[in-house]
Image (tube, rainbow, N blue to C red):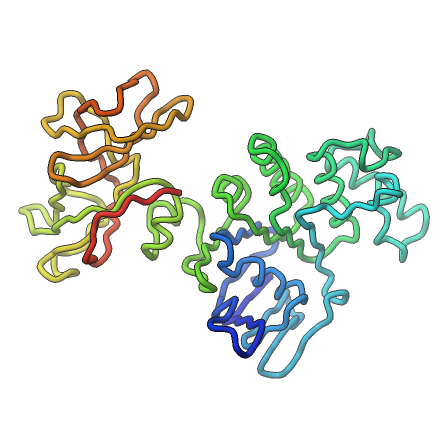
Length: 366
């Protein structure tokens, strides 16, 4: 692995109730894009700053390739300027008195004039702004300024690029577009990168691997599919995607385990735990919005409590007659009114269960 973060803890003061980062570990292969995601205050930026060298590790070890950047056990701490790590910040930090080309060339003083000019042209071409070399930053759009900030960070050929919520000041539509552009640029340059965001769509658009952080803990590190379909904790299940936890019972059937739910039996589900996995088979089942299908012919009915228009579909929040709540993605031409009862049935490919909680019915929304 190229970047290795091993049991890293970061504390900002001795009196701190809990560390900002608590024993976080993950690996990133060369050329991979990793994303740290989580709510405000979860520790994702603190962990990024530790990799950059802007915060010291209280414990743990960080290496990039053969180089040890931090090792609390041996008191090794490589200075940030010696790490060959590039950073892109939220505010771009472009120099307003310099042209676009001069901004990109700013960290290339060790090169000859010809080498600098060549590198600047290559970076401008990489980010698709070759026509803007002589412009001032204020003459560019927010998205173009962000691409120049990226070009400047890539110009010194860092061995690792760190990005701290670089799209946070841009509108939603532009953020999604730039996330896709950024991924293409990083892949074209073969750059290993670690990105921090609180936006799931950015994380999914960018990341080869994604880490979900909560209260300083790295709860899970994996690809988007795994986080969505096989969350390792209730927090990950709540934070990623839309869905609910609902009480269920795992029982033995003739063909193997099956699951009794408030709105029907999941017959022969994939990857289902055995009944003995929980006391009496009682558990909480994670139901994603795409696990529930609108079916007028179904005998199970649910009342629409809320609806959110998403263009091609509605996100319905539904309540069963027995009181349980579920969510469902429904094609938008099925435009039912709030308060209306509709037929639903389960269509679950991945059975995700957790130990029963005292208050088992929770809506979760990403």
